[in-house]
Length: 228
Image 1 (cartoon, rainbow, N blue to C red):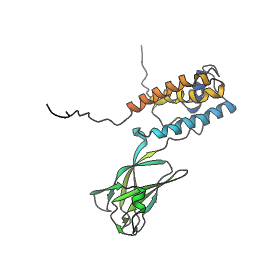
Image 2 (image 1 turned 45 degrees about the vertical axis):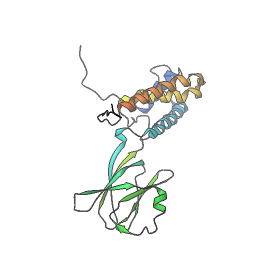
Image 3 (image 1 turned 45 degrees about the horizontal axis):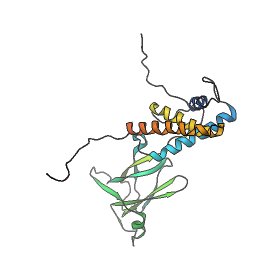
Image 4 (image 1 turned 120 degrees about the horizontal axis):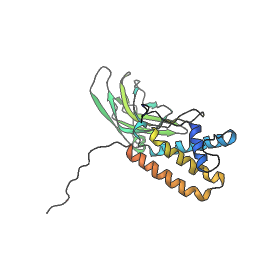
């Protein structure tokens, strides 16, 4: 008996689609979807992927990024792929190595600031969201120098499946989640609404399993409460 030395198995967009349609009996296992059937399923798959963004906690979508300050500028638009920013941010003066935290404040607190032109080392930030994808960070005090660095941790959106050959930006262990999710989404379109609950349960169970497997881990400490 021999084993392979390969660990790179993945499914393309069209392979995920074909497996989901085979689950519904729309095509035979091994056949490929084509034409409008494939295009409809591709839109549905992208809806499934975008809905998964709401879970947010997966580690590979939490990335560290930096922005460079401009003296007298308080507002900084982030990349279109960012959908959330986690605190704290950190500030580093140009040419130095020590960092200071930048803590989040509510939009109400930011609006209540009487003089937002005050300049200094940013100590607080708030986040403004504008459709469809614009996220802006507002700092207070306003940065007083150019070329300083603010580091932040962003949660980024899943990449689209644009072509049939695209593979998703998910670890391969998420493939079952995607196939089950697409199967459930397509079931009503093929007159199988009665099967929606079954496939959706498989999808949710597998999604929860992967989220629990892919979260950040740390030690569990049990402390007694009360006294004897």
